[in-house]
Image (tube, helix red, strand yellow):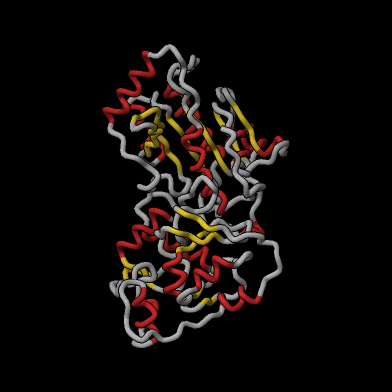
Length: 387
């Protein structure tokens, strides 16, 4: 993905911002193909834009686009759900917020926004040549951040955060409900309970924790044998619960299943009451030490199948973890590389025969925390590579 940032978001808005945001599409002379057909159908044939897929121009609409007025067809709906919360290493979303595709993307200049838009969507929905104008600007603010809601044919939906949640809950195959994203002025620092492994370094490098931040913001526990509900309630409340089994080769005082059962026990203490609107996230990581029976128990307790996240370098599998989590996009097909059970078994055997203990592979799941930027305050837009 080639991302083109907009610089100096703190500068005073220029007239170019207003002109681009309020431009009107001229009626096309003849219909184009795909998304180019949208303007023709709306302007010439007077078709309701809700009856056209904003992502591809198809007239076979399945439902409404959750962020902008317009339809979305079934194939594009699946693609949208799969890519909605995917992020790149730079901390910005990986795909266009309109079509969830796109090669060259325009990045919003608002430091509190991580959304991107492809040239094709901007030119077909806002106006031909608009992407070039935006590219040349130094203070462009995206269509979900602008104070006015219409830009050409692109009309932001009212209460789009609630629309997005309803869309996800209705259309996604995930058994877990999505939490409504939080406006920036309501975001608070994330409060973390980290079990068996300290993830402070990772969260700090992502901007969720400040160096020297309030020690109450992250609580790390290695042994929770004697931890009871009253303890957790006194330390909390928490917004994120993280737990992991030790990597292969590490000396452990407990069997691998102990870490799963203790994580599940504390999850019941930490989780908000039923019906609470407060966003709450959890992640349990198996460093390939749980046997098949324990994996099945984990899936039953945590009410989902795991996602395998591999570390493939030089064409060979170097490491992998199994992850159970309710963080958005964990189960995206674009997040994973398919790894066979035979490859995982061979990796496990090699690790068991090695005299060197494996490192905690937190780097594999680090970027899985990036979707939390939609819910919690972050203190830096510059991600650090301290891992």
